[in-house]
Length: 130
Image (cartoon, rainbow, N blue to C red; front, side):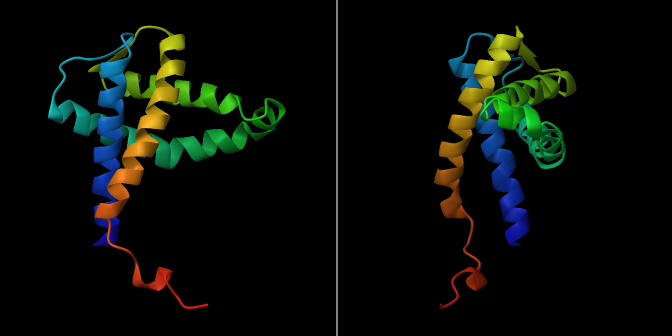
């Protein structure tokens, strides 16, 4: 039950994060802007973050270390752009909007995860006495 709740919250958080990012940045568009489109985007970004991001991050680890972590911003932008290729309702004008969108989406997503974390019940095994 806890896993299902985490998946649902992840889809909602990703959908809200991309929706808020599109509302803030004029270079990112969701057409049509609807709950269904946001949920679909949330699902797609959940899959991208769960499967593709770890592989790309691992393969790009040397350049990420050399750039002191700044290459992660490029990875975020490319994965956001990949999401726009998969879901036709998401349009990104240029790479620079994808780069800025990745930054904004990361910040908004982090805040939303912090807020929504309260809806996931705590695992009783995580609070063992020391």
